[in-house]
Length: 141
Image 1: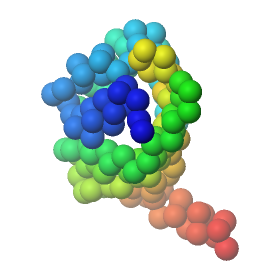
Image 2: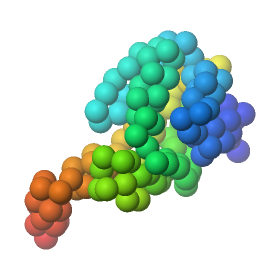
Image 3: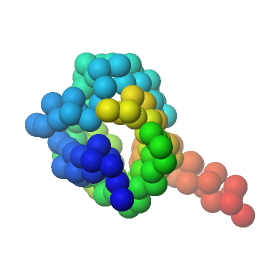
Image 4: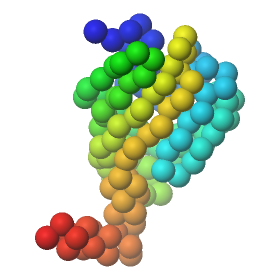
């Protein structure tokens, strides 16, 4: 059974878009620390600005929450993100699997995303993408 905060987190993330980013204030503390493979931002204002920038060229971005594991003030959220970005892979749909580690009290104080940056970005680029895919394939043999 998820806490109300995690229920709200899942609901917001599964409906998040460039027009409702103000909802982030409902789940994140004022001093939230957010980390992903490309950035670290501190504070709800900086986080909202970061998401605003991310969504600028997105055709769409949808999160599908697959599993929530919760334990005393922290949780792991397993998700799949589907997105299309005007400047990546000619706007075609891209699927990325990932997980988020959340630490919270009344609101989320810390959010760290774990995902394969190759799957999200590098493999989608015209020149470097095939090279990255070849390296990953050879490394797994």
